[in-house]
Amino acid sequence: MSPATETADASARLLVRDLAQLATPSGREAPLRGDALGQVELIEDAFILCEGGVIASTGRMRDLQPLSGDVVELDGRGLSAIPGLVDCHTHACFGGDRVEEFALRASGASYEELHAAGRGILATVTATRAAGEQGLLEAVRQHRDWMLRWGTTTFEAKSGYGLDRDTELASLRAIAAAGAIPTWLGAHAVPPEFEDAEGYLDFALTEVLPDAAKLAEAADVFLERGAFDVNQARRFLESCRAADLALRLHGDQFTEQGAVPLAIELGARSVDHLEATGDDGIRALSASSVVAVLLPASALFLDRPMPQARKLVDSGAPVALATDFNPGSAFCESLALVCSLACTQLHLSPEEALAACTVNAAHVLDRAGTVGRLASGYDADLALLDAPDWRYLAYHLGGDVVKTVIRKGEVVKGH
Ligand code: NIG
Ligand code: FE
Picture 1 (tube, rainbow, N blue to C red):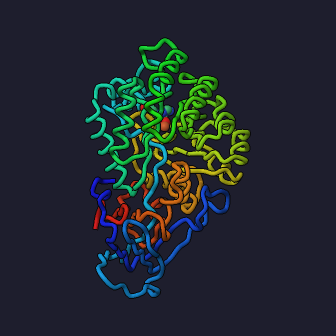
Picture 2 (picture 1 turned 120 degrees about the vertical axis):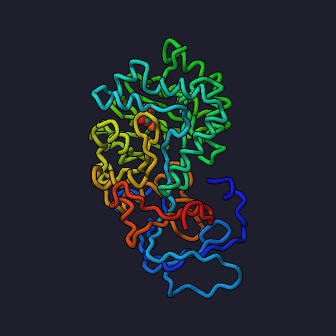
Picture 3 (picture 1 turned 180 degrees about the vertical axis):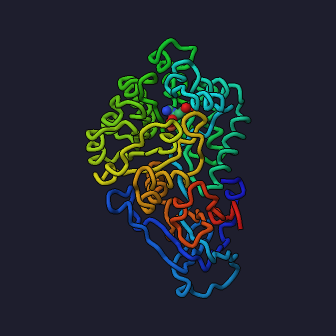
């Protein structure tokens, strides 16, 4: 994530030794569903050998072969290792903050009311337009460093607070320059200079999409009452698909407006939020390959009902977890806290939570072959927890549990 990692010495070797535990989702498949979501492989008294930025081998200390040549050793005594976490849904590129709005909500105003009154997303649009590309780059870097402290080594970030051509493209460039995976959230809200959603989409699809498609990997839409309806979302996503972007949707956050059937119809990578999804939506997702991305920090922050995670997992739907980090509905960069919420509010096991923010999140970002597991051939992205049991990740609520973070074989935090 830091520029230094991009110049990592291809031959450098790092041995993390004497780990109390190594925990990783097992197998090589993605996405994981049903019982497989909870299958974590545990190695006690473990080592991880990294070479040239990838994992060369893992195993028990007693099986470690003597190593010749230069090897940097890192003492893992009393620590447990998990894969570097993968945050597949953030809005990390924005100017300003919404602390005033937060205080208003604390005294009773609702998020939807504030949005309708021109605060909410549109307040951040004003601040983001004023930030300039350099300001946005600094913001994404700062947010990346916050995430890194909690063990996140790969993250997606959306545009969507510019909503004009220059600021949307500047946002996507800033996101990529900070080492994140860019998603064009071209249909987040209708900005004030347009009278209606159709007029804004005419502009976005003709003036912004051709260049956004060169910078982003995916497109996203906020399909909700007061934002874009199902027909507008279909129009937006079909155009984006034709421009070779993968598709994502914000759906069923407050009300069911057809996001799940649309995501399935269009073969989207994911449909995210799902706090309002009922049994029909759960059934449909269980029979599809669209990943249900759950964002419990957002539900908590807005005091909304939690999504029906247990039902989704038990029905066999592929489920991922993410922070939704943004200034309005989830000012939270910690996937560790999200794992705590997953266990306490969504009733997932620590094993299911781990797989949901590693392997399945990597799958949403089309990177499940390279990140999300501690196994040979995967990127050497590791979080070392200051605990002899890896489940402290979720158990220590809000705790400063991540001691060391390694990305592509380089220590980027701690030790
Ligand atoms: O995922 N719901 C739409 N978008 C964001 C929130 C954006 C904001 O409040 O600034 C979300 O919650
Ligand atoms: Fe979001």
